[in-house]
Image 1: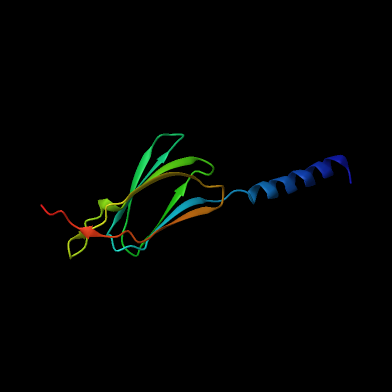
Image 2: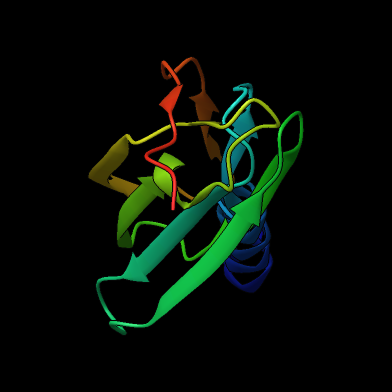
Length: 120
């Protein structure tokens, strides 16, 4: 194989390998609670931009994020309006997450014990 042809083949193989490393990075929030609509806040550590999302009972929210960037998250169960019986959930969870290229991180938002609403 001639040198230019060998370089072209190596370049093509390198591009194919790099393209396999890309893809969409996502965070998935699955509301499996009885708490109502849960508020999610994500802050990109590089841009310091905060986005706020809502995920209703039984719904799944998928958010595309920048790969390999750390995000601070706040999952606020207490933002929910409560249920017909007057029960609310009061938990708030905070943390950090970074998602590699082409992958996703799933958060199963599960049981938080509802308590009676304090009332007006």
